[in-house]
Image (cartoon, rainbow, N blue to C red; front, side, top):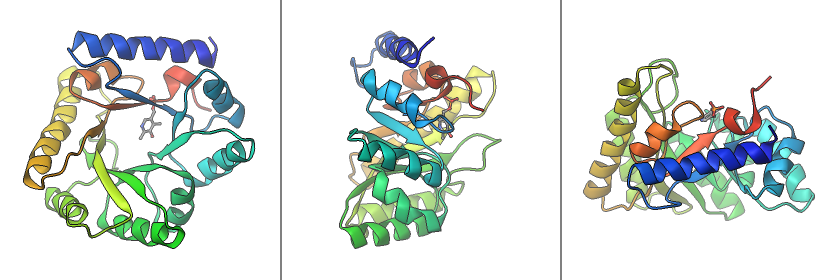
Length: 231
Ligand SMILES: *Cc1c(COP(=O)(O)O)cnc(C)c1O
């Protein structure tokens, strides 16, 4: 199947999952995860109408998406992978959102690099909920401190939009749902405590996105189901 056909199928099943769980139509956005796939694959998706993409390595993303810019394409790019501090400078140049903020020093660096180029950026705080992946805040107090710093206007170039997580890689649906629910509950309690709107919950990948939508995801990040297996 072509990228365009896969995209149509994924979009249709997102719409199905929205209606099955009583969500508003189009309340869930699709981030097409193009990591490890060549620029031509991204162009196929762009030509099919997809404009929001996710990449997890800054170097790869920078090469690919700078080329797309120079070829005149318009897109939004989210960084979704663990980010090293020395990659933040390039990341903020190409991304509209960093979804994988997992420590406070990263917020400091994002603010510093954004202020240099006078750019505002959205961020999500990644919450660790799966056992296998090491990514995300593991300490709830530190996570809350990050929320408080963002709420306290500590970072003028950063807008905290919500949270991201990766569920455990398991067939146990209840474990997966618990992971998504944990993040949804955190969002609710922080939004209330800090009077923030925090509208975004980025959760759900190729294997578990219908469950994520049932649990309140507003962004799903899907690679394999659109672009096929990665090399
Ligand atoms: C690769 C990746 C995805 C997409 O995974 P698929 O299973 O290919 O859909 C989503 N989120 C993150 C953080 C990723 O690294």
